[in-house]
Length: 118
Length: 108
Image (cartoon, rainbow over all chains, first blue to last red; front, side, top):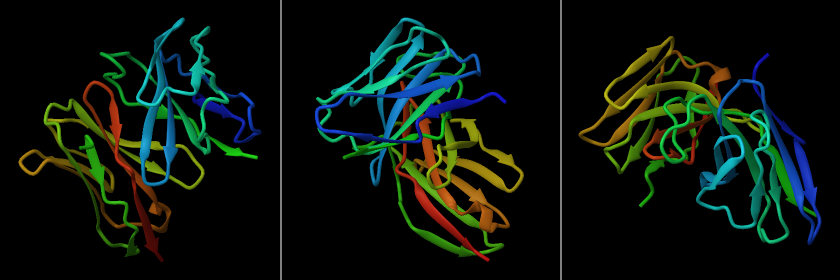
């Protein structure tokens, strides 16, 4: 089955620790995205990538980093600089990159990773 | 001002009712809009998407846009308990903008 796989489902971070969230897709999509979902705030864009080896900051990139070495994979690292990391993190992909962080096709989402502070 | 705003609810209806979910938007230049359904502890699942100029029907679901009022709406006919979820609207301008979601409960 084609889809987007996020792992782990739950993750705990200690003070001063970097953690990496995995996102893999087998949909052959060019564009991939990371969002953060907090209660009452909706989805906020962290980073996006329209093509391998290229990525751009979204609206709330501070304290996060990404890489896009393969088309199928777009891991997100939550660094110790992110002071409020507790949230539900969602990875998405779409077929055709568009202007900026857009696309002329809708996004499809993984089932998320819930990150909490220990 | 946010690009898209959505009443968080919660909304509770009896089984079989018609449900109306709405979002308001501020930028008339959006290209198309989408509705997602999100169950608890899951990612959003795409329900419908349609271009800014048109409405769309798919089974029990109808997506509409009212440009004069700057509303996008999702109607659910013959609502079922399995429709209980959070519904997110989204529009595309130069990136995707999402509403905060409306929590819906359909009571058997």
